[in-house]
Length: 479
Image 1 (cartoon, rainbow, N blue to C red):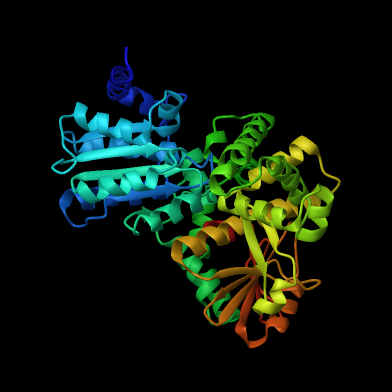
Image 2 (tube, one colour; image 1 turned 90 degrees about the vertical axis):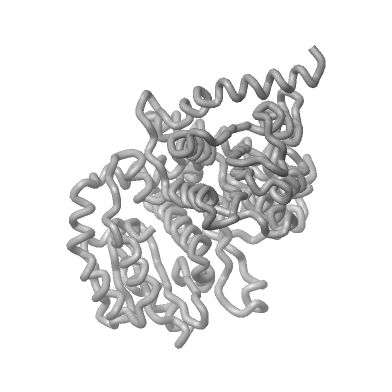
């Protein structure tokens, strides 16, 4: 059998087995997985394409490994099969295709031949491509198909968010980018416990926390939401939150009930990111890749790091360490939180690096232990949870920049929108408003008010009327 026959056989087999392959991706133990928010957006793109309302027909889903990109492709595949039965729809894992010796362009061209359609005149063709970044020139190939094939809808995913987005820019900004992040608590409740959010509550909480003119208004808006918060929480057990922050934000781990088993899976995924994804993002020297694993362990124990000191400890140059940190952020493994201040003053201070999923930090603690107390460890894990909340919100809504107060006793987060900012402090146990108010004093009139997220039982306004303390359950429902 020559290579052409092998390729045809591969594509034909993929067409035959597509339902079976993807059917396994949307079920766990015979139970159909719940859809996430991004699925609704993808379906809207598909429906608008079919109805002629929009010509947006190239959607890219980047994101961290383990966030469920393949599941979203599978769910979208069956949406098309159910609602548009006459359409031609196919799914290819580019990783699998390349292992078999076939390139992206070869499988697409052969598929079009098999269904008897020409790219220029094709109608109702949906091509789904997983891990597309594994093909070096994927952007040029898909740009060509997009430009010459007005009847072809392209939906692709990949593990490197910045890599995919920058390539989409090179392709002429033709693609829509819909990032898939680790799950919020509300998404976790839907997927794992069939607890659905109360319509409109999230937007009300978001408005209260970020758009109030002062702490008094923030407090009043939050108190007005209390009946709905109580109603939602009737179906949420305390154990749900405890599991979410330790093992629940990465959906691929949910079928595993054993905590140790979850952490082993997560650590294997982290190693894939470091050894497979990082070289695709930047030209990092092969000798520097193992340094990234040591760096992640150090970051699990640190609130912020000195690049020069850590570089010396790990035996690399500061330039190399900075490159590795940037790559880990581009891979969506870390979230960089810059120090607040002018460009000059901030440049002299250390940035803070949080884990995009708190499960990753918990997994590193599980494998290597930690000299820190349980309170400190849990506080860092909760800071990751808050970091993901702010990162998702800012990126999805294009709403604000994320900083922290690097001064001694400063607050964990500063959300800057325009010329004003809201200050957040997060932590385990009960916390007073000291850190928030200290940061508000430092940033002056730009600081509107502060929010302290902790284990308080009630929503409360501080005596100074500058800070609102809220339980984690309230903050979680705004994410």
